[in-house]
Length: 184
Image (cartoon, rainbow, N blue to C red; front, side, top):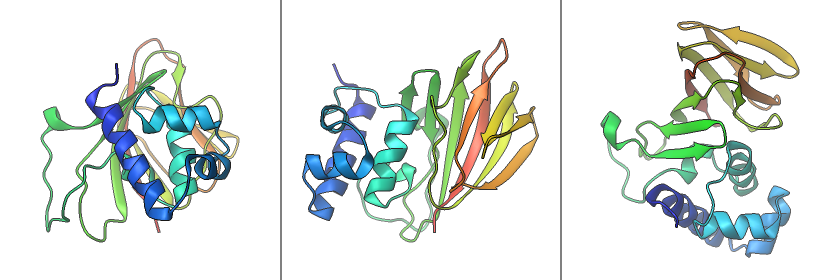
């Protein structure tokens, strides 16, 4: 049974797809995903991985965070309590959305948690913009354009996110990183 976050992601996906005037089939073709996958995500029947969500967001021309937002009017300032963060469960962890909702928002804040010996996506993803990564807990390896960067707590990494990238946790305990994404 779909949880509240999966339903919200599905509703946002459907709203963005309809706004573009696309059918499910057109979104599937544009994203390179199977029609059944797109349908299951849109109906909230599956917990989509980061790679799937990024492919859908890229096809729709929106930042990944747009799929996690709640509908509503833009605000001059947005506060979100830690306990109220929307989160999407991934195969190897979870991704939490930090506050969003500004009218001209270009930055997205996310907290990525990876369990021991897991990865954010089976293959690297790419999207327009830039990413800043800050190690919060444990050790994480960020693979960018085939090069691996080890990040311990407090270490940071900045890169053009159009380069293929993903996060890996080779350690024996969970790792957490703060992601700040800039979308042009």
